[in-house]
Image (cartoon, rainbow, N blue to C red; front, side):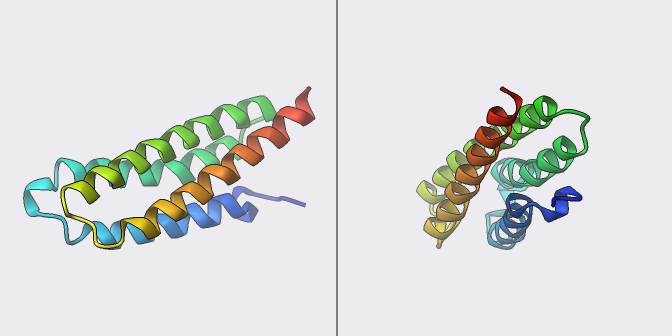
Length: 119
């Protein structure tokens, strides 16, 4: 039985990803502080925040809408990781991409589960 968003595996995994991204972006060039560093951090933080906000809503439909927003943020993050990799800012982009893809799959699974229950 899920009591809060903190019980959801996708929330836990996305919180772990936040920590990884913050650690990995510490080495980005200083001129990127207000650019890519800020963007990538906002995108990764958006994932667990939208899961949490959606889980607190009154309906499964609303929860699903927030999960779609989280999914969009995960896709945005994926693109930003690829950009950072192309610029040579990330040494282990593959690890972050694998974790991001796993979270996207979990979000899609939860969305599908909610859709089946509301149909």
